[in-house]
Amino acid sequence: MSKQMSHLDDIPSTPGKFKMEKSPFVLNRLRWHSSLAKLTFWSFIFLGLILIFFFRSPSSNPLPQDPSRRSLRTYNWGGSAWEKRVRSSARVRSRNGISVLVTGAAGFVGTHVSAALKRRGDGVLGLDNFNDYYDPSLKRARQALLERSGVFIVEGDINDSALLRKLFEVVAFTHVMHLAAQAGVRYAMENPSSYVHSNIAGLVSLLEVCKSANPQPAIVWASSSSVYGLNTKVPFSERDRTDQPASLYAATKKAGEEIAHTYNHIYGLSLTGLRFFTVYGPWGRPDMAYFFFTRDILKGKSIPIFEAANHGTVARDFTYIDDIVKGCLAALDTAEKSTGSGGKKKGPAQLRVYNLGNTSPVPVSDLVSILERLLKVNAKRDIMKLPRNGDVQFTHANISLAQRELGYKPTTDLQTGLKKFVRWYLSYYSGGEKAAS
Ligand SMILES: O=C(O)[C@H]1O[C@H](OP(=O)(O)OP(=O)(O)OC[C@H]2O[C@@H](n3ccc(=O)[nH]c3=O)[C@H](O)[C@@H]2O)[C@H](O)[C@@H](O)[C@@H]1O
Image (tube, rainbow, N blue to C red):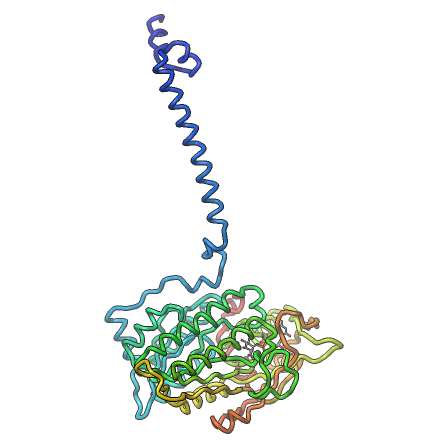
């Protein structure tokens, strides 16, 4: 027993006991160990604090907090099979056909324009980042639709210059139909940086690659009726002032028009901006009022209908998708060649802006009445004051310039267009479950 105890005594149980019994050398070594432990402990605490600070800082870790970055995820592109698909999709199959890169091809307008170009034998290659601004399954369904008609959509972001350069290396596009953008007026207050990312940085990234391409393509791109902002002179003409945007969305589209001017001026890029007026129709955008009104009326949910001060009417020049597609194709067909191929501007290039509207504004409350009749369901109307979030009270396009120069002539009224939309909506969401998303 005592032997055991002495043996146990050799093994320090507490530092106090150890101090009493061991030599000064051992004592010092132990002190040193103890301070090392303290030092290690405090270093860890310090490092931990630095890491916490680092990860909480918005500028150093934008990924989790900044939804505009969701499109910066990496995409797989490249390889010979991929290049073959790119080439085959962009191959022109009709005499005098054009070869078009359509950005935002899985979007609402992008899908319709791509399909129409393909139908007439043009070469079409799509590009889309499939972000989740709205239900990506709708974008995938549009992609499947285009795939069936032979249009390949490359998955990637317009901010990816290496990808854009690669596409121009593989195909000598004659035209670019640039429809990729962060759309929506009200969402700009929630996620301002996604507008800057797509509508400004993305546009510049695309124009930089186009300017260096040889031959340079002609570019047609989507501006917006929202650039008229607080302008009160109606109908809106291209000559009217556009320096009072009411939303950041509008400001980025207006900035796009000025950027287009610069690239036209310096590099001889042929550029045409189309100011779309509230485009609607089958395969539309679920964030737009006519779309989610339909969904919520069917669900029996109340819908917020905006009105201006003193019960003033809020109205839009709703424009049917097929009319917009005709305008886009006419803009492509009348676009002149860029003049800066080979890196040197050889003369002035075409710079155009057109309104593509319907020329007959309809109050939002009438839109709801039409939907009620088509859906055979009464809406629960929740009339509320137009919020101060970027919406303007009305839009109304003067389209005489587009009529004269593009032969643009809209033919679908809201009643007819919504009928087609509702038919599509009911068949697309016939399972019911998709409508909830
Ligand atoms: O013309 C354009 O340039 C723009 O058209 C639409 O913008 P907006 O006209 O605001 O379209 P919706 O969001 O569908 O709104 C249509 C109308 O419904 C009204 N509204 C919207 C939402 C709501 O909850 N209640 C409501 O009454 C709006 O004030 C507006 O008058 C698109 O969303 C933009 O991307 C596009 O650029």
